[in-house]
Image (spheres, rainbow, N blue to C red):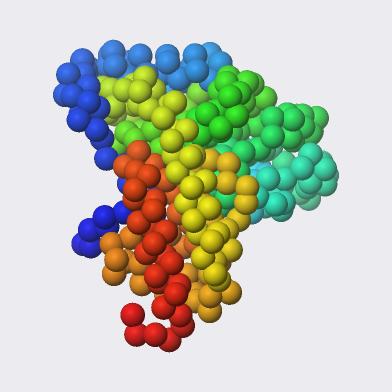
Length: 352
Ligand SMILES: *Cc1c(COP(=O)(O)O)cnc(C)c1O
């Protein structure tokens, strides 16, 4: 496997710090699925408080948080509403259909966001002919939408539109804390319009594994049942919960550095002829397009890989994504931009 000296492929590439590993080594543990793991119980309580919800449950992944929430909210034949670029719609193997028998209604809109009018227009008429519009899903920050932050008013409006039609609301908050740091608006305020919410620890927060799903007590009771059905009930999970607690205590404010680094990278890339950077850069993601340089994204990825730099495909042939995180320094940002400038400067058809 190739080693990348600068890995901007995702904020999932972060490795646990020495201090995080110490916290993991010293964690007090028990049997999680008997609710006897004190460290996991503490983590769940911390996230319930952070998000302003009654209860929470620790799960192995963010995708499992989404899928368990869908399972609890929906019956077979129900429909979820979700942005066309969302993780739930594109990157979870159609789990909503496979695991819960739900269909999906994709909504359009710039930067991974849609309006209350779009929700309103997509609601199915109530009749035996139609699937039942049941669950609205919002992704904050939007991933393939550019790391954008939904405005709070828009979040409230789309949730109100869903509720007016008897739908439940779910927040995919894989990077919610990036939105919190970018705006100064606390997590519980962002979470208030939602029945279920979750945050990921294996993204920018820098833990090796885990996510926590929160909601009211009745929701979390049912989520626990689905957790057993889906095989997500664990044993001495305090080892990994300790990493998540460490992240909550030490890695939230520092997300601002990732945002600064992303803006800095965006500025450097913008100055390269043939590279178009999507703006504004609000959090830790930089999307850019190399069509005008006469390159495909795949070709750029190949060229910079030779230089030990990695970015990811951006959902279209000439669009790319670079993500900043805990293991990326300001110097690396300069070096990555230089590698991209060199690759683009080499032009099409050169044998670099
Ligand atoms: C990464 C991600 C997920 C899935 O989280 P995992 O912990 O990787 O399972 C879900 N939604 C969004 C927006 C993500 O970026």
